[in-house]
Amino acid sequence: MKIQHKIVVIPLAVMLLVISTTVLIIELYLESHLLDINKKELNVLAEASLESVRTLEKAEAANDTEILRSFQRLAENFSHAGDFRVTYIDANGKVLGDSDLSFDQLNHLENHADRPEIIQAMESGTGSSERFSSTLNIGMLYVAARSNESHYTDDTSHIAHPLVARISRSQATVQGTIHEMRETLVLTGVLSLAAVLALGMLGARTLNRTVQNEQQLLEKRVQDRTTEISILQTFGGLLNACSTLDEASEVLNNVIPKLLPELKGGISIIKSSRNRLDSIAHWGGDWPGAERFAPGECWALRKGHQHFSTEHGIQTTCNHWLEKPDDNQQTLCIPLLAQGETIGVLHFVMPVDIDMENAQGLWNALAEQIGLTLANIQLRDSLREQAIRDPLTGLFNRRYMLEALDQAHSRAERTKSDIAVMMIDLDHFKMFNDNFGHDAGDHVLKAVAQVLKDSIRQEDIACRFGGEEFCIVCPTTSAEQAQQIAERIRKAISVLELTMNKMALGKVTSSIGIAAYPVHAETMEYTIKAADEALYLAKQNGRDRIELAQVAAIGHFEELEEETRPELEEIL
Image 1 (cartoon, one colour):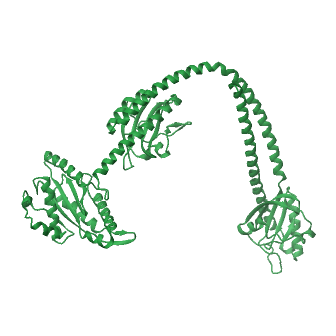
Image 2: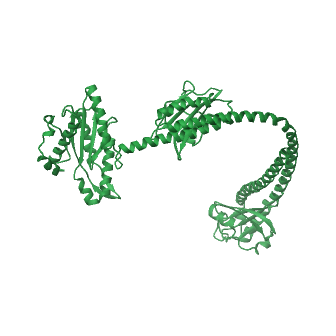
Image 3: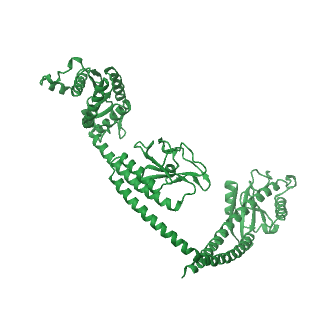
């Protein structure tokens, strides 16, 4: 089939399908909608008929027969107002009056207590149902309403209260309305098909005129696309070779402006804490966005997909833009994803009339490549983090602490400041392992590690020195300041409520030894030893206490007698 024929045939087929589907949907909707309207109207009539019952005079109700005749007359009079049937029923299901039956026929009617609408009305005040009426030989809609108070209440009445007024109407009216609407829709569909046929023929004539122009545009797009693919391949190779965020930022600043010269852009990555994004690169001129912002300030992160500041005439600009775009500009934020996790956001500021079709493919490809590269860099950083942290407690390990201590020592020598070292050991820790098992011991170590993280300052370094022993390095901290920090830690550990699997593990206490450089030792190695000796002294003096190293210990650790060391080890 030629393209000219397809232009005519395909729209006709689609239009026919749409019209058929529309007729079916509208018919179903109208049937449901008209049914709801009928129910509401009949419910109002039922409640109004109950109000009419109040007009019956109790004084005229000499006996039950007269009462029943009064109900029958009321039903007949009320039904004259429209094309509906009125029935009054007492609480026992007995029919008191029916507008479509004679008074003599009432005695031969079966009990109505089992009718669905009557049961619903007795329970909730109103009820409705649809069914075929064997009496009238037609489909009917029934709506019932229960009275809120009793009528004709006296000692001799045999009418059970409360009363129910039921209004019913034939469904033939609804079907007739639907049939008329169906005919209207079919006529409209035929006219629409004729219009589509005419437009299709007109389109087929103009198609040949535009083929040559489209072919030229296509050739130019292929050429541009080939150039873009070459740049993207080079870009991907450079990014894969980057080992740090700074190197990746330099590549981004050099390559992306060549691909999207009309756009300003930037990249922000999410910190490991997941509560902040930091800008690592931006290009194209002065950057109008914030260098740091919370994830909730970006609509793209909140929606989980790209966000334009102006979509469908609705302007919603992210709060991290410090300068709002003018009428001729719009912003775009694209989440950077890798392995199902959001690691950052790619930002653009662009003209409103940009060639969206061409640019969208570029920035989507860039977002995918950048996301993978940043994820790889973060993975390498994560592996390095695992190499310097204790896997159980999350504190730094001993190797990292010694490296950090050397750096702190160099700064202390330049600034002539102190460095405090605290050695912390948990008292009777072996008891937890012996009494509750090693899992309980690990649980205690994790709890204590969390106390240390919460108690130290940002510049302090806490590490697991070995076993149940911890070490804290406090740069630019005197021995007196370290004592205050240590006391805060000791108290926080002593009040820990240790439970595991709903089993109480008891309390844990700690002994802390403190030494400061250069007050207590000439080198950092001796400072650690001085803090270790102070820890042994705290153990010897009764545990759950803090001991400060002696100044006399400077330079004499290597002279400690070997025979005294086993005694100190026994204290632990």
